Amino acid sequence: MDTNEILIRLEGISFAYPGESLLFDRFDFEFRQGDRIGLVGPNGSGKTTLFHIMIGLLKPMLGNVKAFGRTRSMESDFQEVRKKIGLLFQDADDQLFCPTVAEDIAFGPLNLGKSRDEVHEIVEHTLEILGLKGFENRVTYNLSGGEKKLVSLATVLAMRPEALLLDEPATGLDEDVTKRIIQVLNRLNLSYIIASHAKDFLNETTQRICELNDSEIRQI
Image 1 (cartoon, rainbow, N blue to C red):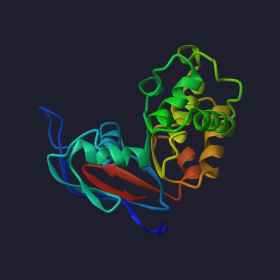
Image 2: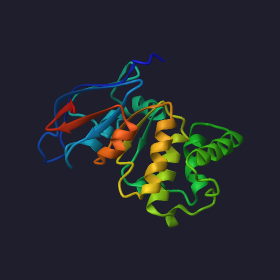
Image 3: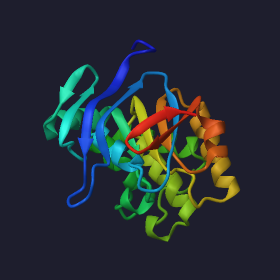
């Protein structure tokens, strides 16, 4: 893949939640292969909404979403996009729904048609990357907030995506878990965008930081 290839392009996107004013008004944005972008902005500026539009969880009122060289408009179009771009939700509880850690991590690869042996290998490898060996049979409901965040990241990485959208991955974490996530991200050979209020975290994990505000995005 070309190191400068456009993964997702938003063209003239307009979006508003029902009964609210426009959050995006003819908004343009490009996410390219090799990008490691930090995204900041006040609460309500649209960072999470931007991610959801990019992978088809929300549909814009106007404009086009192009991903991997094709215009995407139907749900079936975005199913392919979601296989290639992993989204880490802001709240880990939105990502974890299986009884155990291993089952949560295995869920995505199984749905991709991987064999049981392949999935077992993926689960073990992903747990090792995140320093979670021995967590296979832990009950996800009983994990600490930091452990849940690590496991939710594991579920995304287990899908072997080509790029990541990470929504507040460092919020509410202690220093040790934050350092572990920084190390993991810096070792990955993946493009990603991180939405976060933690500028120190972004300084250690991204190449440039952009601010989203009033339907505009600018590098800072």
